[in-house]
Length: 391
Image 1 (cartoon, one colour):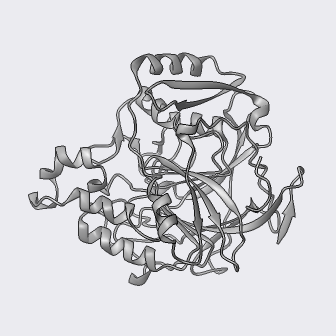
Image 2 (image 1 turned 90 degrees about the vertical axis):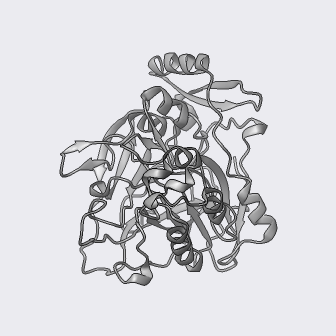
């Protein structure tokens, strides 16, 4: 069904199936089922310890899944995908039998049908004739607050602020392994919030339509975050009540289109600031596979992180403390220099809400047996039709 936003851009319902923390399980094993949809997003922890065989098993079911686009990030348990971490700590894993980390990384980066985001962005166009023909910008990152000897950890707020400043202002969907602090990150056994406060601040700056995460199995669920119009902090949090289990045995549905629930108050508008060096590739998806040219474009989205100079960190921290009426969009000019643009509140006035989804599939904590499983969370959301002018 098509809809028109207040600025007359056409939108169309797009179904996004969200999973995370599958930890070597798959729909083929029978513990959970994969619903149909247009886009599949996996928010990390595909495996228990990131061996080549574990990753091959995970990629087999994902590549076989019939979705027009499939987006994957790594998690802290996919340790070989953090090549720097694995080079330092491999002897503590896999019975001291080292894995080929480069080959493990290539499995995802070179997949013909998966968009692998490694702290990077892509623009996805759904072009299949039977699909919604919508498009969206997406940012994905595996990084988490450090938690023991696991991959992709960062140690302090300054490092976290640097990482999450990389999320482009125009992002429609974020996929992070860690949840933001206080939003889908509560651990029932500790009764505490363990998500990242700097990620929460970054989401308040960007205000994406969807923020998909995992990592904290006990935080699984969904909520709407209503952003304050002045300081980027949430003014109200509303947890989404799922349909009773008897409605569907394979999924739990969130309707953000207004058909059966309140429409998401987020029109995706932003004040665009994209230096040429930060432009993201346009990844078109047709059917369940990507063309060779498109696959090449997809792989170019995977880029290493450039460390921030200390003077930029200091500048960013000062700005963050004085940002009651401003949002900060920080990018790189390709020469190691940070560019910061102050965006007035009106830059994202139409982005009033974000739907936060913790999509953890494994319900029990790592190592706890027997495993229990959650259902995938399915989100129906209106996204812009790609052949309309994008402003």
